[in-house]
Length: 293
Image 1: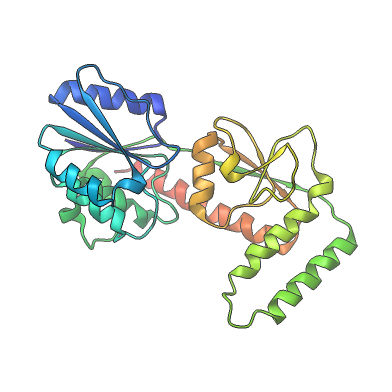
Image 2: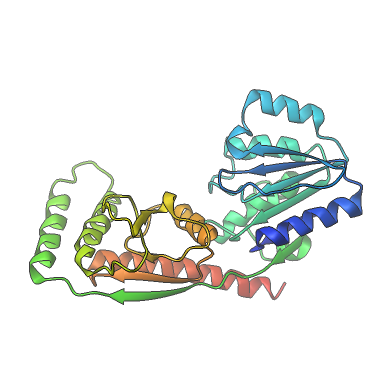
């Protein structure tokens, strides 16, 4: 009665929902979605109530849904894995709604945010009492109805040359940051150095190409921030966002599967290359092991 779909496009999602409603005598659909992930869902003779992810924890939403969701309701969670914290308040509220009906469909573009154990968040939507406190096991993919369409990603690095004087500026910047770190989080250093390295790439960029950067600091029409990236558009990456979920959202929105990244060859760019490749290897391993279930 409950299913998880990984890697499905909007058209496929709509088809799944409509077929489920026809096969299970659903009287109402509740669609839960974050900003930018609302489905254009209209089903003849079946009411659809749309609930933004940010509203899930609101008192007026909570009590309304507890009163109205019944055994003939279908809950659809569309791209609702927004944090790796399985005990997040929004998730906990959603679990109360899930207890009201046995009809649940979960859609997610990637099977996890950063680590395979994140998949337990999706399983908790299906059956929180069954999976509470458990770590991820690939056997769970066999135990539940899980349908996976792998998103195969490839990173292509475009290495550009920067003058020696700019390399020296980078070294001086790094030394200054370490010297003045104090009690600050050391993780702030690669974040700031990555932006600094991104600035050094400006003169190497092609004005005929579209680029994406961590923020809108360049002030050029062909360079956008991640939040301003357009759906189904292709961009070359100047610097990666710090949060993994922000880049995941970017890949969902654009549909990009080949990622071109401009690298100075500096260590901080290599650090982010390694971080992406490590994540992508975990993703590939998940898809490979899932096929064996």
